[in-house]
Amino acid sequence: MTLTCKQCGHQELDYLGDHLVEAHGLTTDEYQAQYPGEAFASERLLGKQASRRSPNRSHPPKPEALTVNFAGIDFPVNAGVPESVCLPMPPEYRIPRHGDLGQDIQHATVALRCGRSIYISGLPGSGKDAFIHALSNMCRMPALLRQVKPGTDIEAWMFTRAFNQGGTYWEEGDVLKALRDGFVTASGNRVPYILLVSDFDRADRAQAEYLRLITDSIQGRVDGPMGQNYQVLPGTIVVATANSTGAGDNRGRCVSANPIDASILDRFERKIAFHWMDWRDEEPIVKAKFPVILSRVPKVFTQMSKVTDALRTAINKEELYAEFSHRGLCSILGHAEDILRCSGDSKRVPKNLMKMASRMWLDGLPDEDTRTVAKNLMDPHLEGGLIDEGNIGHIQEGPVAAGWK
Image 1 (cartoon, rainbow, N blue to C red):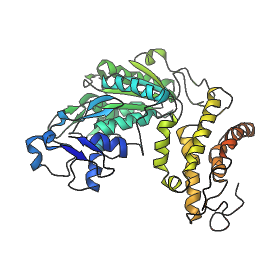
Image 2 (image 1 turned 90 degrees about the vertical axis):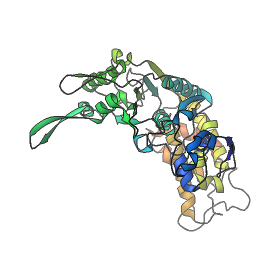
Image 3 (image 1 turned 135 degrees about the vertical axis):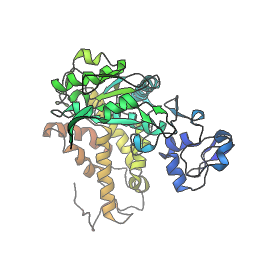
Image 4 (image 1 turned 45 degrees about the vertical axis):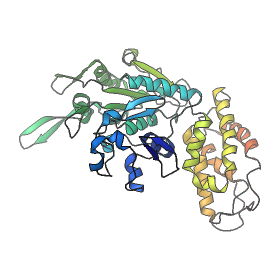
């Protein structure tokens, strides 16, 4: 049976779910909310029960028949797992397929498909956590996110002392229960969790030693409050993300990163470094995030592709002491879109729009010399070529006034 996407007309045999997520960032629930009664899976795939299914069910009753292709690897969809216990899908997420990050993602995906524990390091804004969020959401893999904050009690992730009328008692934490029990579906199946530990390299010495217990869980055991050991549910995956490779801050821009004991790092079965996105992956994401720019001044994206390449090349050559992550790019584009929104009239576009917007990133650089180097790299790509015929070159009146720089 051929199914047609109501969003764009794309056709697939038997199942639209993969296309909806990759092309439109929609879950099947969201798709059916927009198009009530529209099928996303064929009757052949649904089986004999298809005619008796509620149109609002998110997945057919034969989950073993459903897979999601994530970065070229097929993952089963856990149909009995609600989206509420998965990590949320990052806005406008697209699986990177090009350049160094595309290869990083492929290696990480293979490791996760095989149930390996992973330590993912990488520059700020390279999509380390977003990658795990997307996989959890698309494949309905239950997941817990815990962020390391220096000085906080990590033991509380596993258990805490609680009080009631009978006195004190040990209360098991969410992490302990997830590692040991998994998520129990309505049919009684136990589905293993992903435990995502973010900012792993922010742990102080005491926290790092306690995190050894979590990495020990990779070997199948986890400690309880009374010193007892529990078996970790087979298939549970532990993922740690960090800005450094465990040797502390070696670039001078992530100074809160601490060295991590090599014996702890060694417990992770796979270690993968993430790079920044290739523009071929980044462009469709920012175009989706900033629709006002796309509709009114699409040439901005051509300008920013050249700016992004110039800045990141200089950073990699250590000619510019800065970071230009996806967040930095979105900071500039977001301010440009705010300016356009405040201008009111769709014909009003400041000639120096992107120079004005670029200060949202430039002002965060550490000193004037660094800002000068960055401006010299950016300005040649922001000169002219932005205004189409019919657009006004300067804003003369209204909320955004002429003379802005």
